[in-house]
Length: 151
Image 1 (cartoon, rainbow, N blue to C red):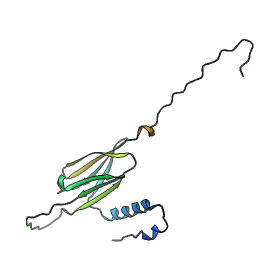
Image 2: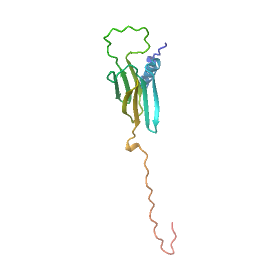
Image 3: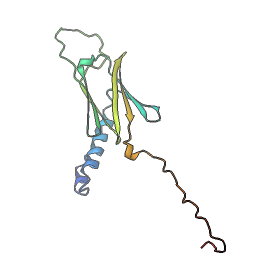
Image 4: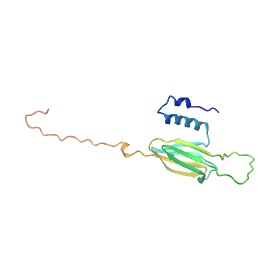
């Protein structure tokens, strides 16, 4: 597994700290494929993220949105009972998955069913940014006096 070190880039990207941080986060997320997820467009301004969280209960999951960054965390409670596995194929490790959200995208709801965590998102543009029709008024025609030509 290769790791990329972006620290030499920080010297040449003064003022672009957020961009460098995004590159570093994207590289770290690409290295870890757990848990798998889907991103689906469900409408004109609606999206859904589905994350496979088999074995996690809703109280072991946390969803947080802060500054256009959606963070989903899974913290597995300590398993007190002694279990002896012959084969362990279900991963029960802690995880943290981050998604960078576009401007004006808000989380509308989250639901856990059948081992899938579904997070619904929608884009809500403020009224000031929505396109609007501007009515066109025409100047009233001024009556011409006989014998004068319009300029």
